[in-house]
Amino acid sequence: MTQYESVFSSLLDALDKPDNGVDEYMLRLKADISEFSKSFLLDPPKMRAFLESAESVLLRLETARSLSNQTLTGFINAVESEINIRVRAVLRESINGIYTIIDPEAVNNRSLVEVTKLVISGGISVIQYRDKVNDRSIFLENAQAIQELCDDAEVTFVVNDAADIANLVSAPFLHVGQSDLPVKSASKLLGPARGIGRSNNGPIEASESEYSGADYLAVGAVYATSTMGKSSRIPVGPKVVKKLVQDTELPVVAIGGIGAENLHEVRHTGVRSVCIVSAITMAESPEQSARSLVDIWNSGA
Image (cartoon, rainbow, N blue to C red; front, side, top):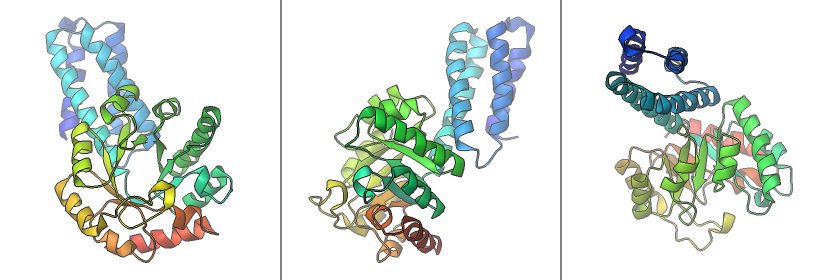
């Protein structure tokens, strides 16, 4: 029996004891815990269903803690801890492979939804929706449409900057920059089963991001790039990225100036993921470009 199975079993046993005075709320909690514990055995779990179920149970546990006696509180705390550990693991494991950004300013005037479909067909693992030009209503509409495509394909979906939009569409991840909402503040706005990634231009910023509770570290620009206003950034280079990978247990996403010509070099740094934008979304065939880069990535470090 695994650690989390043991913890869940202990809480269920405690809820069965007559002297704990289990009321209707606790009975519902017992049913939720019993059902949710099965999802811990799925590896990998279905992201959407797992996170929504985890969030529901975590919120119910929060209320149950205030209603329970001292004995039950200990078991509730243990279960909550195990769920949080598992949620963080599932979120972080989902950051892998080729990551791209869907941005209305970087799709050659094509439909965001159509470009999303093409890059998903090309094998992209993570998609971030970034939008600095559209009204919030359009942002929300696009986020919902892109998320549905990602959910159907089991592709990890990330919303850039807008914590409110990420919340409304229950995106698994929010991505923030150094000048955006701080990680700790953003986490208060998101549900308990959501992750946060943060952009960093070097080891000092990355260390601060990790300390603040980020779930992945985007690092770059690795090479010179003009995409998305990063032309003024001094490239950190692959050696810095490699050192950062060695110094953290978080997934590292390399970004900036990466394409087919240097993807192998970046892959050798040990990063879990690389973010490539213009070489994919600005290409004549985003699907073909994505597939070619995914093939290079999958060929191994």
